[in-house]
Image 1 (cartoon, rainbow, N blue to C red):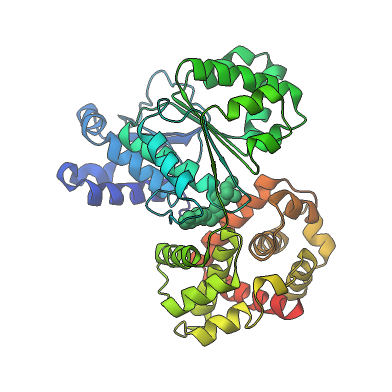
Image 2: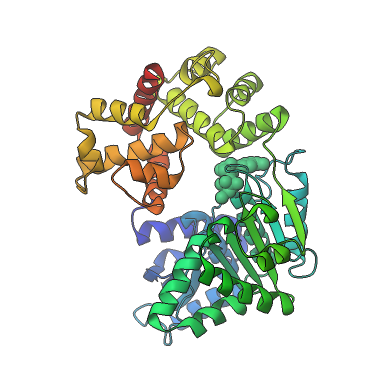
Length: 433
Ligand code: ADP
Ligand code: MG
């Protein structure tokens, strides 16, 4: 895990060196981070000539590398060390692009062929193919992945493309705080001057009349200027509980449904995900995993994480027998009933805590880490939403749960002790359920 900005910068420089050897210079080692906040990474250079060189020749590679290293879309700026750049543009709120969520890493099958093709088409011709593009399907079928892939593709073609990528929730939150702070005009300008507006999980607009009204006008402004709008939801436009005038607009462009993947597609996804994590997995095991988990791709990934943890802890090669043992032989998804209660019981037993500790506000590491492990396990082993998981663990919000899942995922990769704790916990939970 990258701890501080120095490490982040060295990782970025290492990537730039391999991606762009022609422009690489030995003095790249002298670069330093002047500031990294609000989506802006300001890199200090030994002198003005060097700063100019980087600006002219290496901007794109640095931006791309910063994206891969941090997982964030950051604006890279070069300045002379010690002299932070003059007028600092107020950065738009950064959105986070997952480096793995690309078109290359998206497995296409009959279940998602239309959605995938329309996303590729739109990313190459914003505003002129399908507008709006409306993707829908139940949770874990790849909607958010496709949205990130579109952004990666658009930015690959044009670093300067103006994109706003918002969850429906952050759209509503930003709107509300704009009202409170009297900055509605600025909020409107930010959303209406983009090339591409993406709102993920638009179903959450239900019962939010003022937000619907605002979104209606945003939609019209963009649409009339031939700017691209992409929306996702958990159900088709007609089934959403929003104003009719929005429903009719959602159908103006292309509506594409994502279905649960069939067996062959699931096998291919397991192989793809294993490959991304550097986990060697035989066809036999990929098929086994694909039979165990049938509906939600996020759960497929959870199963892989368990295998990964098991293989690393036991040090044994990953055979079918080991996989069956780890995932619970003859206990396909439909028969297992893991609940949050099972998970909390296992975690409190293992770390010698009380459930009340996990639900408390206490943040000491001895409680915070088990709490985050609980969130991670609940996310991977049950079907509860982030909100529900947060609710069980002391009323925490979904972003806290998401953060915990990301943190534990990273720890599993970097910390053998955590890996073995998770393997042991998973085992106990499966036996108890
Ligand atoms: P949704 O937004 O529809 O709930 P996500 O986009 O978050 O689903 O997908 C859940 C997980 O499944 C992600 O890790 C994503 O990479 C993965 N996934 C979904 N569909 C595919 C696919 N066709 N190929 C590869 N990975 C997929
Ligand atoms: Mg999603």
